[in-house]
Image (cartoon, rainbow, N blue to C red; front, side):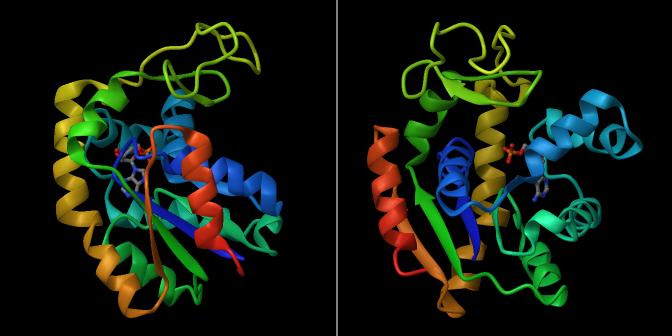
Length: 211
Ligand code: AMP
């Protein structure tokens, strides 16, 4: 099964992608996580992406398409995968088509802009393993350190309120048109993001039902 999660930054795509990954036994692939890892290790791609990502802009299509192509060729993708944060532009979606990849279902998690900024201020991440938490909706066990490796949790640089507002503008301008793109292909399902993660998961699994 090939699934894609669409939605504004902070809508909960990553969380739902991880849950669906466990349930269906297929990898969740986050281009944002791959890019953050490349920035951390200082690869050529990481250095090229850093200036865009830190100010909340999209990394150029050519770079991201290269990243996803390489990732989807890996063996663990042969029975399916879950895309989180790719495609983010119509050009990226067209590149996926050109690779001969047809998604089975695209789930768009809908959360109003007003709620996004508040939600993002509570997001915390682990710089060691990349796990993502939320101080209210998905706290780590002790609320301060990562459950996986004990690293002290921090805020992502691009989750500051000013950067979030610009990421939301970019989402509406460049990513939201993908809803029409996948609606026309008969692949789009809308899920209203809920206060509690479990409730969004229930609606997401319903949307994926029968797949
Ligand atoms: P995310 O973790 O999905 O919020 O992504 C974090 C950042 O990585 C984004 O703000 C972009 O700078 C970059 N990024 C991730 N995925 C893409 C993509 N598909 N196209 C362009 N930039 C991306």
